[in-house]
Image (tube, rainbow, N blue to C red):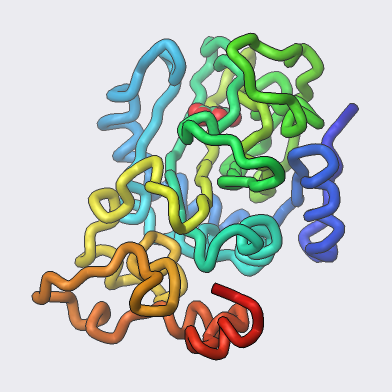
Length: 294
Ligand SMILES: O=C(O)CCC(=O)C(=O)O
């Protein structure tokens, strides 16, 4: 079984359907070479300086990783808030939350000679399983061509339906998410996947980030990775995605409120109303209740 691949202009509902069926899908050439090249160029010094700081059995010994993406690579912003990404995240996550957030944001450069990463599911971070509820989705942006030879992400199609258990399920049916530079692999948090071995002579560079339900704690602390003075350089939509907003509209339902004063100017005019209006969620608590919510 292979993953379904879509062109950048494909209807969002068809991609959502493929993700619900297979647990993952590829959308080809969603970002231009110019953007992708700029991201990698901006990340280069950080990857060379501190890429190997996260070496571990799980992360690999020949894999560069870096997390302070927006501090180093402002060119990554359009990828994180891309309309297609937001539309897919809306369809897959908004049934279970009022707003979702970036859970983690990591550049991963698998160097030649690296071996396979263990297959895993990202949502095992959270010690709950709620039938039918997806806790997060992941997006892997290809910053170069992804091939089976250079370590394209390995995905087990259909594995989002495997039950959680202490025993490793049969994950032998993995496929390589091969895709040209600028494409994106979308996968559910429950889908088994992992980095591939790099048997080529060149690095395999990708930018992977997750979007998780807004009432969960972020996997990586985005307020430290992108502190307010850096977040201020980006759009209200991206700031809200980073978590600089609240979950829930009504005073008594809000999570993530900040009442400490000394806010940056843009927090005095919080981004969340615009973000909610985008998605038709600007209803007041009373009218939301009248419509059957809350
Ligand atoms: O590098 C990849 O292709 C996947 C990495 C991954 O899934 C992880 O590190 O959690």
